[in-house]
Image 1 (cartoon, rainbow, N blue to C red):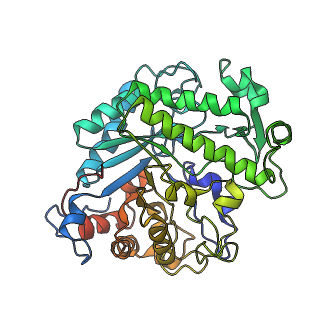
Image 2: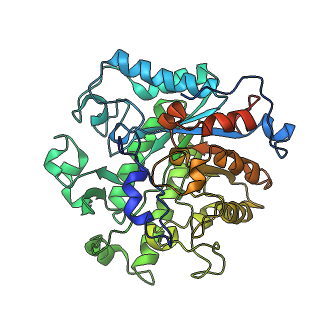
Image 3: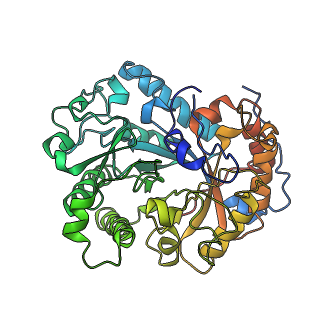
Length: 424
C-alpha cells in the first residue's frame, strides 16, 4: 500500500463502520486541467470563488508525503518541499497544512523535543536546515498560507522507550507514556503532560509567523479491540470530581483545546486554531443531536473529543471534519454528514471546511464510487449548497501530485478555474 499515512493508523478503528469504509488508506500524471477552464458547478458563485479554503495536508509521519525517504541531503529535502508548494500554487490551492510535530518530535530547532527521525533516519539528528522556517517563508512567497500541524499526544509508532532519542522527554519521564495498540502515547490525564505538550507546540508558534495551528484526529487513541488504555493512576488522582472516566477524559481534551487556543492568541494574535476530527461526532441512535450514520467509532464516546461543543462554543476558529466517504455510502453518507456539520456550524463563528479523501480516488478495494474521477467534484458541488461550508482540504499532498485517475484534475477544472483567497 506504499508509505504509511496518518489515516492508516486508524484503519482498524474505522473498519468498524457498518460497511467497510476504508477511511484510512496508506499512501504512497494525468494531465492537469487547462488554466482557462471555467468552473462548471452552478453553485460556485463569484463571491464563493473569491474567498474559500482550498487546502492540502502535507504529512511527514512515516514519510507519508515528505520527505520521500529519510536521510536525503538538506538540498534534496528542500527541493522536494518546494515542489509540493509549487504544485499547490499551480493548482490554485491557497493553503498548505504542514505536519511539523508528527510523533512528539520537531521539524524545527526545538529546545523541548528532538529533531524528527523522518528527516535524517535518526531521531535527534539535525538535518542541517530549518524545514518549518523554510516552509513558512516559501509558502508566503507563493501566496499560500502555512498552517502548522501538530499531533499533541502521539510519541511513537512502537512501544520501546529505549528507541527514542536519549534526550526525549518521554525517556526522562517514562511515567508520562502509555503503551497502547503497539504505539506509545502521552497520557492526556496528567496536567504536567498537557502543560508540556502545549509548551512544545507553542514554541513553533512563537518562532514563526504561521497562519494557523492545526490538530488532526488524534486525542485519546482510536480503540483497539481487547486492549485498555491504562490511565488508572491518573484517573484516581484527578478524576474524583467527574461522573465517570469518560467525562474526565473529555474534560482533559477540552482543557487542551481551550488552553491551546488561548496560548495561540496570546503568543501570536491573529493566528488561527483549527482541528480536523474524524467525521462522526455521535450517531443519532446514540444521541438525537447526532448524525444519521451507523459509525462504529464516535469521537465523543471513543476519542473523548467533543467536537460539536468546540464548534458551538467557538473554542476553535475552524473545523475540518474528515468526511472520507462517498455520496450515498450507507453507513456514513457524505451528503448527510455535510448537512449535519453545516447545521452545527450555523450561527457560530467557527468556520467549516470539509476534509476530502483524495487518497481514495482510484484506490483498490474502495467502493465503485471512488473509481469515478467525478466523485470528488460532486462533493464540492453538493457542499456548495450549504453556505456554512467555506472550502475543502484534500488528503494528501502526494495524492495531489500523483492524481492517478484525474480526480484532482477534475476538481480543478470544475471548481478552481480562478484563484481564491483563503478565509481570514
